[in-house]
Length: 155
Image (tube, rainbow, N blue to C red; front, side, top):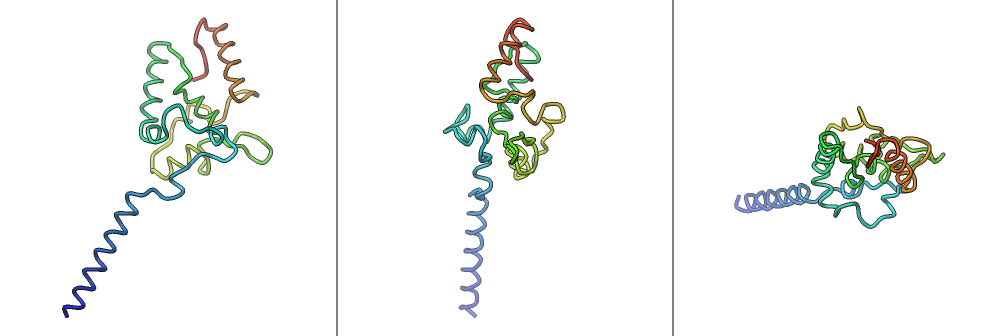
């Protein structure tokens, strides 16, 4: 009887320990959602340290939105368009794949976290226009400044 209680207690402790490890340690798929072949895959860091971006990216995007909508200040550091441009994946033909698709950067992470991803109800899920990349961003900024006066870019 004592032996059975001891074995049961040991199994219970082992099970609790395993559950705690699983709860604290992210799965392999949760650790890295950078899509192979994206611009982000070739970079050492995002606009902020990875752990900070994972926890606060929505705050950065929200504050960027407020500065843009309420004050007319457009910067590219936390722009949703910049996120899309850097983290977008491409299919075998080289066409941009919507970033909110389940196997892409935003879609995969939001599915893992069980968070509704509604940004792309209004915003483009792929880079706009025929150009993509840092040179395209500079060109868009120059065209926007000429057209809108200053600091324009895409939402």
